[in-house]
Image (cartoon, rainbow, N blue to C red; front, side):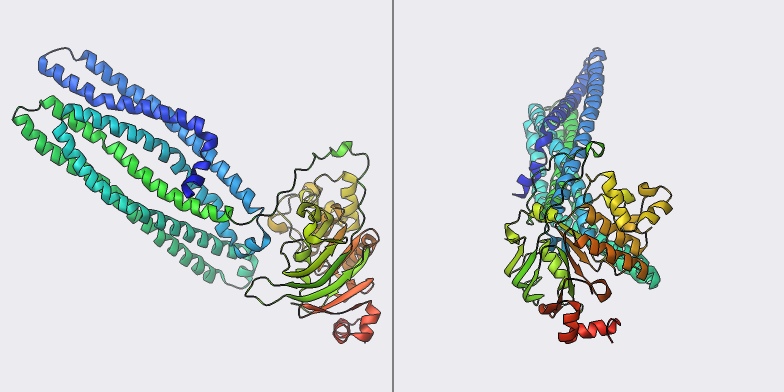
Length: 581
């Protein structure tokens, strides 16, 4: 099955591979002719005849073999790059369609290793490994046929030695595959450790933890080195076995052939040609062993790639119609009607062995207006958003969006109806314009500037040296925390959602900008449904409905005034933030 998957990468390139293989065969034929032409040269010397013809033929064979082989090698390398490109695209396509739950348990560094390192291993086995092996088989069979024509006894001696050593080599191949898979896993682990340090680079610096992190990455590198040495050891053993086979065959042929020449049963020129063919066996046997080694490495890489491809993926949305050119859009698309949300006795846990994060959660968010989720950390507020986006699926109960069960919504349609601002408000590397238009690439210019004005980003755009075309750095490092948060909110607004989800939308804003953003949220709430998670109750005191969560359940709901009067937890939260005395 793994080999079948491996060969699936070859099919789109089989035409070029066949041409490259044919060129390789022509080069092999030219190589097979050389020992025979060398015999004619020796015979011509012994008979006192002209050697011009045999030498000319030998020269032509050398030149033709070199040119044709070079052309074949170029085609193989070109095809190899195409195979790697296809494999990477296919793997990245799969990775970005995986379920969030699966990606959460995987290591980013290991995923990068599979896209970069494992796909590169496929190139060797699927091009040179396969084609060179086919050429090697042809050359090996051709050499054996020619050796049989020279002397059958010497051929039997040669085959006996080669078969014995070949059997030993075959036992090594499964060990090479196992060692290669462990080596690639170790490289992936090293990448994951390094990625951890780079993702928290400033924390590492501020904590004075450079030496510790260097040591951790160094230990992972040592483990990768140890696994790599295992691969090198088994591969070297296979190479030594090949070398021994040829050398022992040479010594045996020299001994037996010398005695046959001495007895007159074999001409000296035939012995020389036979020995030359024997040395010609070195290349095809070496190529076959190398091809077998590459196959084991490719199978190891394919198993790691297949681990990702076998993970369940989210359904693929139907391709959208091409977006109209911005300058051709005369009017903005109509905003769809806001949708309400209802949780009914929802139970959810992140794993079968994990405690329930939601244990019978029930609440309702009316269509339109502002609703807030509040409560202590760990109450399950952010999980509400994860379930609404269907990053995870609840185990029991029901979630209704717009009166329809969330599982009945096509996933692409559901997410198109939602605008989501994450707690850490991620900003991607690229320009400010690219980040703002990330969720709505077809938005018109006036819509873009309207979102910028509503989120108070005008000053930022005016201050940046290239305005909207200014790069914001990796993860938006050149922006402040509050600016990243406002960029994320503007990005969500441009999507024109029917339900806007704001997770701690004002956590990194100063008092002035928080007040301004509260005004924006209130304005947006007149157009659509806004559901906000807030630790700062000042953000949501004017919400039409506030839902108080604690311990994976809903303990109370109502307006600010109602909850201050009737719920102890909410009253305590409000008091600690000086919203009540």
